[in-house]
Image (tube, rainbow, N blue to C red; front, side, top):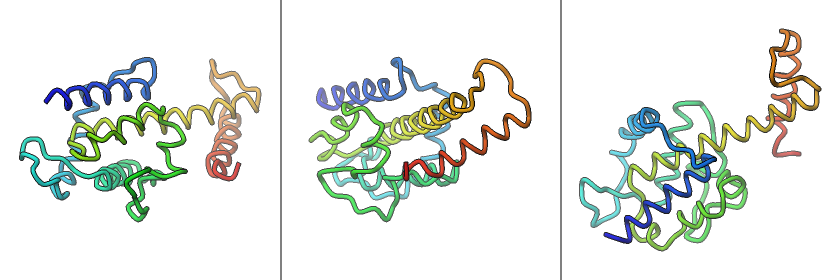
Length: 181
């Protein structure tokens, strides 16, 4: 019991670090993510021995759940969470969003022996989705800031319609070509 509480605390700390400035997940947003995940969650095979109220899934099903969430809610394919990606017991993958952006501490929590043996519950899945959402937001914000700086446009005031068009074109090119840079 104490081990689970320690893990929960470690995950909360890691997610806080990933969300930045000790950011907290807004309760209404947490509930919305959970409501979206629940129908899929119910269909996933659970780890044997888990009680009905505290059902747990393996890492590969967590990946699938996160994939389905972003696919359905934003039509996004998040690299590293594709259902066709092979998984192994030792790593998430070399070029996925986790290994690129999540602090090493988050990865160590998710790769811990406790999680490998006991799996993930629905609350863990909600935290994973919220963390990946924030990572995507941070990544896109960084690209947008680079575009504004490159075009010498101030980020503190409005831009014209033509200026916005220029920003959007460069943003899309950078976003689409990011993995080739």
